Structure formats: structure tokens, C-alpha cells
Length: 106
Image (tube, rainbow, N blue to C red; front, side, top):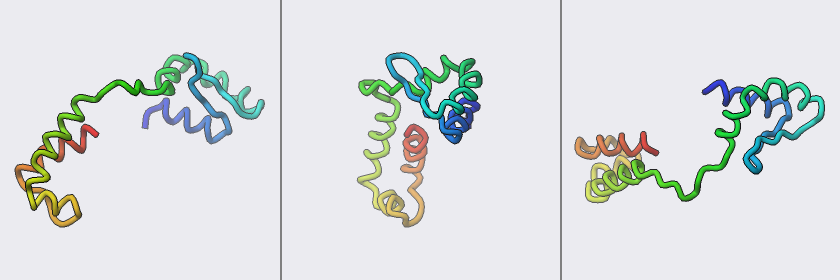
């Protein structure tokens, strides 16, 4: 877990909610919690903006899609890999490599 993630979780645990609004990070919560956490969060303003802004819904992860296509191209033709997907045994030697790439990409 990154330092920034730990910082965000600690702030949440203390009652400070952080959200991305119009290109800025907005904090809300009890005044005492905000007064305590504002100086701690201020040095990380830019990292918080990057971490909290929503992902671009039109951004496509082509590497993941390629891994899905490669794995599914094999999986649905292989009884061993289908059985493994249901929890019975391991994938075959041909299906193991695309499965690892698929798992890591996703």
C-alpha cells in the first residue's frame, strides 16, 4: 500500500472525506478533524488530485483486451481450462501462459 493510500485511509478513519470536484480536492467532515488534517494533506495536493479524479470512461486498456481475447480464444475450446475455471484442477500447458497474462493485466 502506498504512502498516499495510507494517508487517505487515515484521514477517512478520522472522519475526513476527500473527493474530486472541478479539478480540486474537497475535504469535508467535522471542523476539528479538518483543522487537524488540512496541514497534513496540503503537501500532497497534486497527488491527491491525480488519485481522486475519476478515470476517463473512454480510455480503453488495449493490453487487457488483448490478454482477454488470447485467453478466451483458447479457454472455450479446452476442456481442461474450462474445468480449471470451475475450480477443478489446473489449466493446461497451453492455457496457463495466457491465463497468467490475463490475470495480471486485469
